[in-house]
Structure formats: C-alpha cells, structure tokens
Length: 134
Image 1 (cartoon, rainbow, N blue to C red):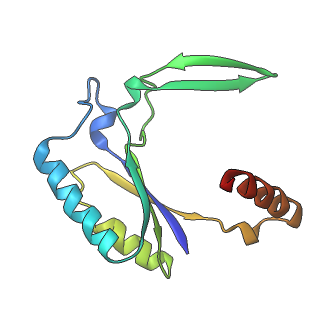
Image 2: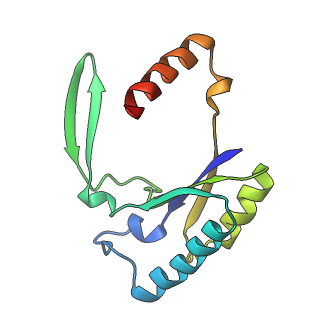
C-alpha cells in the first residue's frame, strides 16, 4: 500500500519563516530519511520552501487567476515522503518517527492504486504512462 506522509511544519505558519531548517534539524531528518530508504519503504521524497515563495493558480468560470504567497494556510505543506508499506499502521509508525519539532504535523494519506479507478480511467492512465516511457 502506498502512502504520502505530508510534513506540515509549524514554522511555515509564522511570518518570515526561514527558507531552510537549521543544519542540526537537516541532519536529523537525513538520518530518518536514510532509515526509511534502508527499510525499502521509501519511494520518493521532497521538501518545499515556505509558502511566501509560492504562486497559486486559481480557476473560476474558465479563467485562471494568479496569487502570490504567503497564503495564511493553517498548515502549509513543507514536504512529503511517498512510501510503500504493508498497512496504514506501518505508515503511521513511520510518521511517528519523523524528527519533527513542537507544533509540526505529519498527515498520513493513502495513495490510490490505479486498479481502484474505473476501467476508462485506467485505460487513459495506461496510454499516458506509455507516452511518458517513450
């Protein structure tokens, strides 16, 4: 089963959040990332800069509007891990091991498998996947 572990850093809710965590926090996170990779569960991971560096594209009535951060979201996403584990309990156990700081949140989300979608969606996805492989 695939899961996304979404990092919702408390620091990103504060004005003027630093773009990168301090070196010790990065070192602790790298230790965790290596443990996750060594377990064979890690599919991919990435981190994000704070939301004040972001741009949103909002759609309404066939047109798009741009807005620049910060956005004041209660929990902006700071990064993610995609993992493949046997159960939600195992995904939660990994989330509980993240070297987070006070106020941080890790949201655990199940990632649907293509087989869970209707046949027509599966065919379209297979066609796209074939194009991407070329």
